[in-house]
Length: 351
Figure 1 (cartoon, rainbow, N blue to C red):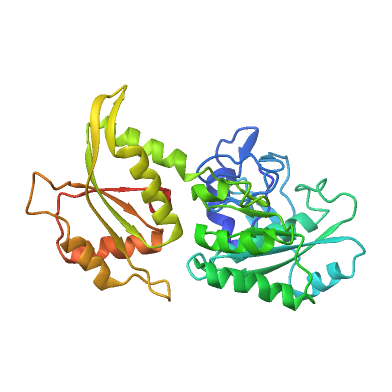
Figure 2: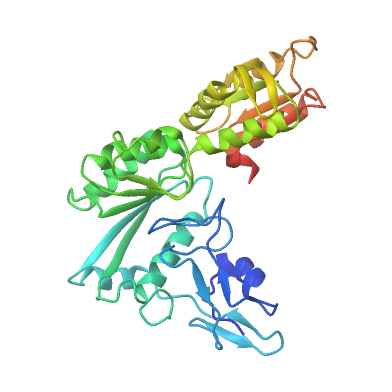
């Protein structure tokens, strides 16, 4: 039998991990690219949890908001945790509370708000047996969620708008943003007020500079680690010439710069002596509404020297966020672009 707290967005996760199957003594519920090691995190892959404790122990009874299904010997959902306007107003009357602001890409990850709301509700519930010791002194969490999209301007406006809605008082902390450009914009504004910020997915190397972003932290590693891994993968296949297509976002341009610094020129490593070459590179334009400029994509693909095999590369690094990468790949398929192309991606669209 399992101990769980169910919700519609989590049924698939708990069905996989905690249903009537053989389970270990502890089921890890916090996973994205890796198990995170910071005091607060927000997982977007399978289950979610605050990583002060990254495991949930198996109990002999079902938890709050669930009941035991005797036929499958597993916990099933039967209610939602306390939340909603009334519950939030009740928290605001508490003498001690912490106000958090969640800045998420609701336009592309519309489920992020639901997960954040649910996590906050669970932390405030001191009777559900889940992380009850975190706020054992009676402190309660208050929170708001705003749409930061994947855009620096929208993100900073969302932060400032929330601040104005609270009489000019900033939140105690931020969770977000998804995209690096949005996180950079917010970190520069919120950092001036000493507001700590934790991002679950912003990986650009620049955000690791503590002199520039002293109040920013993240639960994923810097892109520099991914870049090294991609170089090692390419060399594992003895490839020394690639092409690069990247969008004009901070994340993609940062990746392109980091990769080219590691790749180009003469090398002598465990794979032998080799010279890394860039056969072709092009920057794809992203429109103001976050859509891909289709004409820019066609221009990028038409510029690949497919009719010059000596200087061409079948291996193409596509550096883009997932919703942009999918559009690029769709257009490439419609154009019947170089069918034997080997597309290489980073975690933004290959997860």
